[in-house]
Structures are given as structure tokens and as C-alpha cells.
Image 1 (cartoon, rainbow, N blue to C red):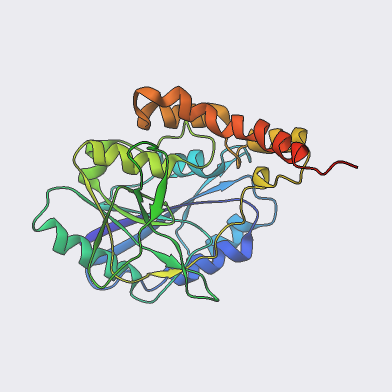
Image 2 (tube, rainbow, N blue to C red):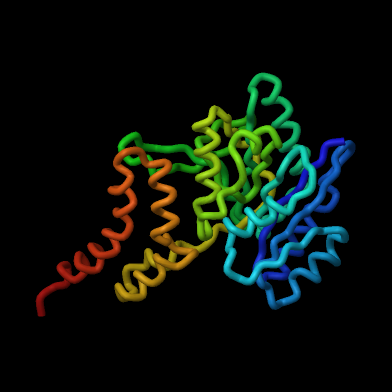
Length: 284
């Protein structure tokens, strides 16, 4: 029996979370035992209770609202029972029928010829069908912090790292790479994990096609140059922006010897753009 433990984290979006859990039901298939560990990060809308109704036996770990994605996933991982695979799953994903089977089949085919493999499931927009989250590849040797999404094909496609929406990670990879880094405030922990894995020789592959739907998140609010600088500065430092501590952690690990430059760039742009806009105003 293959045991797959699904890791999720959520905060105050009960219908979204339970919709994801409903799509997970029936994914186990013959010879697969499927379990779920959910970090409920201080929800006040009854998410935890609703999740237990949808998935009896779910293991809910309670947070205080300060964990966000990275820490919430790290907490869920630490609370997981014995497993053969972790399935990272964002709670805003709705899986297609047979999604887990597709990921496991892809893994088994790849594992026959490669020692260590992570398999990423690409997801599409529920309306347009456009791929929203997938694996990614670095697109510049000069700027190691730039990535392009991987478009899934009819066969597995290699990637350098990945979005963490749907990711199948075998126990052997966790033993080599270690856990999700909860030292990140919210984002970047997924890209960090993939880059750490690649540095250790683990291959990352995007499974054929897409495995479910997930709408793209809105553009970061701090990118809105119409906002006053003070508001943008506050937003970029927030957990869902680009908090300096987390960004420093990421660039120091993955941007090479020039990491201080790449760490500083987003904050420098925040200063430059408003001034550039003021200079471009016509004289009156």
C-alpha cells in the first residue's frame, strides 16, 4: 500500500478549502492510502469544522493567524504521519478526476530511469483554461531571480523549480532535501525547495497536461505605481508582498555572489518608479 499524505494550509476561506477537499475525495485509487494534514491558521469562519465534515479523519493543526503559507505548510509537514509521498496542495485548487493517479504514474515512469524525482502538477484557469501555475525555468544567466513558467506537454517537461500548488514529493527526496523551510514568511518557500532539490541532484518534472484548476492570484499590490510610496512600501514589506527578511533568505541562497544586488533591486525600483513618474509629468 502506498501512503500519500496531503499537506494543506488555510485561513478563512471555508468554501474554497472544502471545495478543494471534495476534489481530493476518490483520488486514492487501488493500492493508495490517502491522508490529509491541514494547518488551519486561525480561521474564524468555521473552516476547520467544515473540513472535518468533508474529510472525516483529517488531522487539523491549529495556528494563530500568523503562519501564512510557508510556515503553515512546514507545520503540517512536521505533524504528518508515516508516508511514502507528500502531496503539496493549495486549498484553492480543484483537482481533476484521476489527478493523483496521473502524478503517481508520471513519478513511477521517471523513477525507473532517475534516482530522485519531484513531480509538479500544472493547473489552469477555470474560465480560460490558460495555465496559471506550474514548474518554472530560469530564463537568464545574468539575472538568476527571473523565471518563466513551464508549459506542460504530452510528456513530462523538466523544470528548475516550481509553484507549490500541486507537487508530489517522495519520502526519499524529503530525506535528502529536508523539510519545507518555515523561515519564509509566506511565499518563496516553494521556489526555495525546488532550487535546493536541484542543487542536490534531484530532478523536477512537470506532469503531462494539467491536473486541476486554480485561478491566478492578483498582481502584488505594491506593484501598483499609482499608489503613494508610503502605501507601496508598507505593502512590499507585508507577508504577502516581498518582506526583506524572506527575500534576503532567498537571494542569499540562490542568487550567487551578487545576491546583495538582487536583494536590493525590488526596493530600489519602488523608489525609482514614483520619481520617474513625477519627472514625466508635463509642465503647466
